[in-house]
Image (cartoon, rainbow, N blue to C red):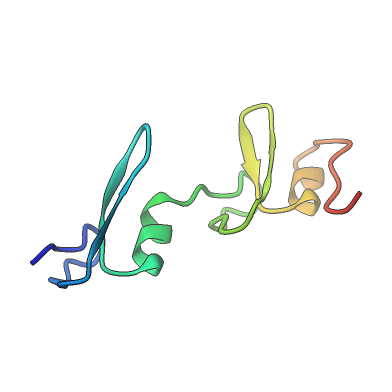
Length: 77
């Protein structure tokens, strides 16, 4: 059986995620998120939703981007 790269669980329904620069085998979306989701440059949380990007840095929301000094980003238009 495939083994999860994060928790080591042998699971017959494990899946593989392939990205241009990394990937892995996981037994759950939770483990895939833990391994692959980017972290907010301000609060360090995992960015599971859309987030925002500025100058190559990722933020979980416009609020965190603003605290990091980014101007002009809003969560709502």
